[in-house]
Amino acid sequence: MIYKKPYKRTERVSLLIQQILGEIATKHIDLSHLGFITFTHVDISPDLRHSKVLYSVLNNKLSEKEINLELNKLSKSFRKYLGQEIRLKYTPDLTFYQDEAIKHEEHMQSIIKDLKISKS
Image (cartoon, rainbow, N blue to C red; front, side, top):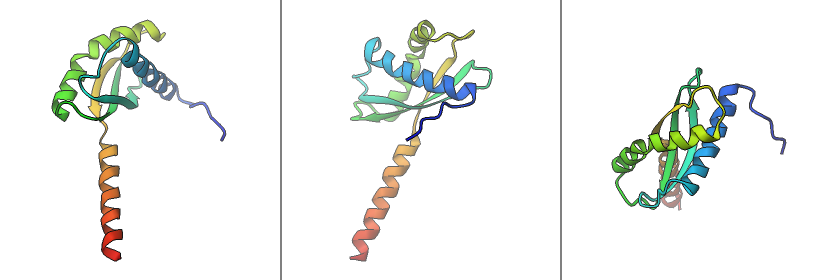
């Protein structure tokens, strides 16, 4: 497999922010009271000032809305640690959103499974 470095700066910065947020979640900010959270994707604005962080949760300990509220409350803390790790003129604002793609994938798999069961 050949690894290609993303060409656009926003893509490179997005990948770097995603990696750093994962490290922050394991080293500095305890998220275990919410469940097992992974950051799946980061979209950053062209001016690198705002970022949209997508996450997924396994073993939810709170409702989806409560988890989203808690993560967005912690965005200032994440931003503080991110600013110490990344070298940019401005540390981007972080807004957390639940990644719906995983739910959609699970839903599609259940539909396919039901179709296979009904065929037999």
